[in-house]
Length: 456
Ligand code: SF4
Image (cartoon, rainbow, N blue to C red; front, side, top):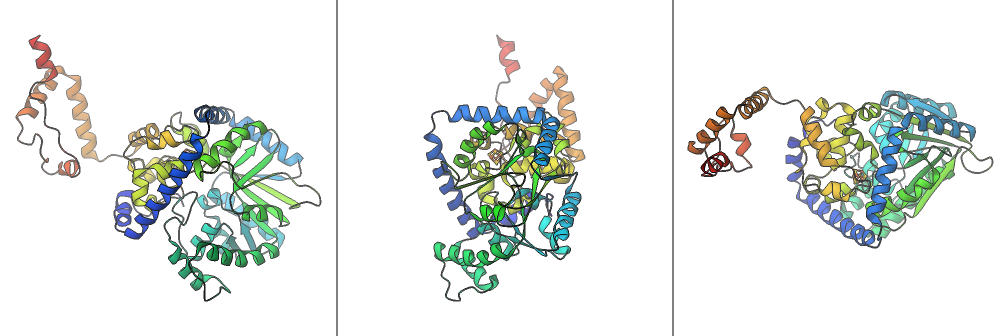
């Protein structure tokens, strides 16, 4: 689920031809940006909150093994069972076995990037278990046999008429007179889901935060479907990436201010559900926590790239990215789209397997400014570009340039040759023409710095 079928440039070219999707995206990202900007401006200490979020995440990553062990101890003490999954296959096998052990063949799901990353729905279906997504946008994606295109608004590429048509086609028992009025569409989904909530005994969730100090897990959401999944079933299975940890309960104070303002543009998210192990007679009586690595410890080993693990999945970087706004999420070919996808997915899979993603950026830096935990995405992009495989011709050209710059006489000669060249200020000839397809070749100045210096 992390590797695109085709490189970003080819997928982006196709996406750019979809006018409807671009209109939907522009409308949605502009609306969220404006809303988020308004509520962020209300906080005089927003920058200090960002600093605190960044420092807390850096501290967590520096002590991850110790904090994970603490989390495991606390969850176990509170009656939960902790499982460790090295990769997607292991995590899917654990969840499938746990569901099978209950004897159930259907699970309800809270929207979770981690379960999408490992392709859990496909694994469950292969085992004869039906996963039902309960977040409205995820439900739209699931009914349409589609893929999410935004972290927070997975069906951002669909407009309401498309959704009405989809419901009429795919939703069992839907009113044939359904209109495309958003409240009417939401009510139809609510009716469809209510019966499922009340009759399903197993739920699968992700987690926004796991608190090492207390063993508490937290899910934040807007629709209340998460609250239903986390409280009604007999068995709850939570799949959490190991980077979602925070050291202490009080650290939530910082993240619960940063996340809703940066993501949905709300002062508080409507539902914050927290649970610690099991409580007799209240909520799920069996709780399993699957701690997922799937490449994260490798990312942790890279001093520049590890910042990507600080991400709290707010999607602010997507909403400000000029590339994302035009191509949409599908072009990234990864569960994590936009700027965070461009730095996280290549690291989780290995850069060679997702080599085009670090180039899916203009390096304008808007993502860095918007990120509530101050992840320096542009620096990671450049760092990953250096690791991506480059064509032999490009490597040879760069080697020749480095050699020339290392030898003053050669460099001087090259500057004069450039001034005399008939290509100065124009397009380069093949095989270098690709470089100037979308850029101007700058005309060299009439006087070089060395000439200027020499005259004085
Ligand atoms: S990288 Fe920053 S802005 Fe982007 S989703 Fe993660 S936390 Fe939000």
